[in-house]
Length: 261
Length: 371
Ligand SMILES: Nc1ncnc2c1ncn2[C@@H]1O[C@H](COP(=O)(O)OP(=O)(O)OP(=O)(O)O)[C@@H](O)[C@H]1O
Ligand SMILES: [Mg+2]
Image 1 (cartoon, rainbow over the protein chains, first blue to last red):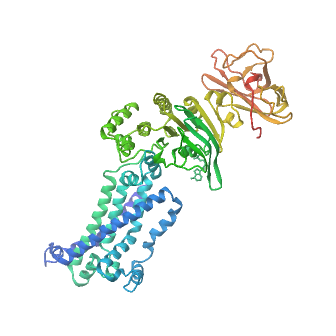
Image 2 (cartoon, helix red, strand yellow):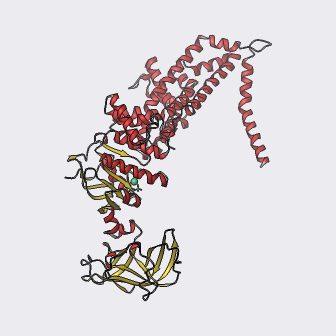
Image 3 (tube, protein in one colour):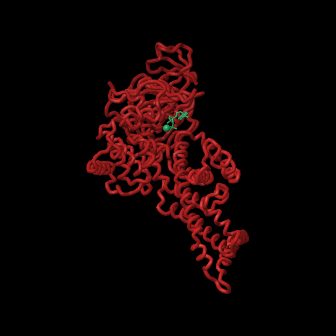
């Protein structure tokens, strides 16, 4: 009994060290820009870099668009599957998991073949249409997270019965979707959104191969040419991701609306 | 013409017919229960009235209007679900107001109506609570208020009490019934609990495997079950298997002992197998033929017509409090009968030879002799 407890503590400590030590190392290194003393100089340099601001802003915008498109696709799909087509659930789950299995580089080469300037749909022709393509590819990339989150939320409430209750009281589809279903899966949608944000903000492969000025390629560029700034950027990226995770928890547990016990 | 009218309604799911030829006329203000075992099609029939399922054939009319193919949101039929189905993101008051808001009623009217409904369900102070802050019984009352707020023409309840514990179930069913009476709302109530159906309903529809077995008042269903299924599903009837001897005279033989049934067996053939029902409270027990005068007990004073007698052995005596239930075995068949507990007499012992007697009219020969 006691030995077991000690064993599990050792496991936890080893696990924590495995994750925390490199982080502390990176953080410590990022503070050493000024010779002989610790300072936040590296961070100051990073934040002052206009490319940082531009790429971070661009990626944030892409992330928000991705979230919007993703929600519009995933919520009705998940709702409809829950309500009318439960038999399709395994198939849809399989499809949503594909982006985890197929490497991003394969997907993006597929896009480049399909949508190049000499194709029927030359999305890579202009910057704006490439942005569009990038958003769509991010939607695919974030699909596993968004779908899982929303689907779990849908399952937590009895979508079918709530829909029927609303319909019985005279409600039509838009009312049911916006006043009954959406408010009850809001927490799930938000957690899907934060996961999407965390995925998109540092994404490298797609942005780089589609040649868009995103944060991921910027990280890579700095990393190849500087010493202290990449460490600072890594810490910043980590904090952003971490903040997203924290927000999921806050949204998930804070004002949580419970379904029937 | 009846207020709610289901005529020749059927429902198939693919090759399976789950509701066969369902005919029912419900009068305005009537309380009708659908009673039957799990999977017999009660919910499916109710959902066809609500519009969640479309009948494969047949027609449903409310007040003369054919609603068979109307969408649920065009029907003005109130529904209460087993799982309450309150909107978790809305307060009690908003739940009750939902249907009124959809109907674009002015807000002053909505407010008044919500207040009225909360008073009716005796939860006037809980309008600001969320569903998860209520007990199951309270949630179901709110669901009832929500369904009634829109003044539906028909109220449908699908096992509304089965998720609640026994005490609340009994008090809430009385509450639902008196509310239904005072509003005069035409109601269909689905249950698989025979006590619920018997105590609440004006009429009961007993269903089995998608068919209507019998429609009647609780009194008729309990005392004059028409089929073997109804007899065994409602109450704790004894079912005895025997053979017809003389259909005209109503004579049958059970385990070698000749008995007379209440009329109605002229449609059977001599020698045909049949089954007969006997309610536990209809039979009385005698220690022996000689002591016949000294009845141990009989639940009700019975009129002195010619009586059937059967000799058997006591197989089981169970003390249930105010009632002692005794099982007497003949050969193939056994009869359970209820006697009132008498503190001055010890109950008879197992293995004792006794005579069971009952009036001829209490022995009902049932339709559907098979099995
Ligand atoms: N959507 C469906 N598809 C196929 N079969 C169905 C469907 N809904 C119900 N059934 C079948 O129809 C039959 C009747 O179901 P129904 O839900 O009406 O029974 P019930 O009498 O309400 O039973 P319970 O007391 O368990 O609620 C069952 O055999 C069920 O399996
Ligand atoms: Mg049911």
